[in-house]
Image (cartoon, rainbow, N blue to C red; front, side):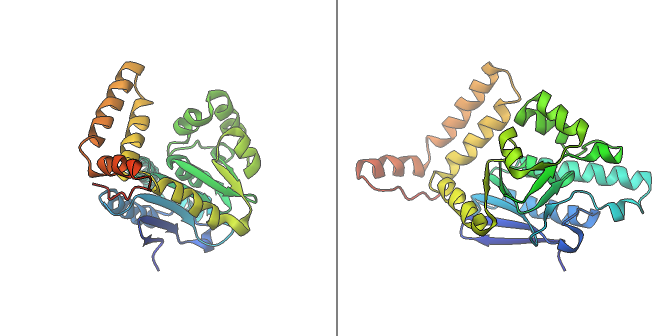
Length: 258
């Protein structure tokens, strides 16, 4: 049985962590499978949005597989920490917009995967946090860097140093999640959000994401140059011409990603 399931429906890829029996925890094999899937998505021109999910209804992911971790040597632990960091960075660097569909618990590495995504949509029952300090370690897959960039240094410091577990609504107040909804409308909410993204030009979406991600790590002058170059990538596209024609004809544009 595959630990990672990839399904593509039209222009949307759904990536499911398929270890419900282990609360979708990441062992080394699962990380390797996820790495291969993410690389395939990166070069797939037909995928315009990527949604990450956890199987079952209890957990998005509770992070590292602690049962496996107890059996590992120090060198193997270092191997796993390196791998999970690299895989989540690859998720963050996907050109397509990404959504973490948080259907339950998201702790440690599970929360870090969600932070590597562009958006996080959670059910009301979801509980999340970077809880590693309670295990005498620290977030090692980007949590100490991505969380403060998302919600600010002081709030991130509070959450990480207290190993606080946040209910979904409180996480929303922190600015940690994009939307919170009832479980009964979870997939409908995700689909609606995906459709609002898909209504826009695919190349423009990727270039806007590129400009934001890279510009945030640069000074303003450099960021503006990145934005200008990203804009220039959209000028010769068929989609830009189609948008202008559709505007003149008072209809919705039909984008082809060209």
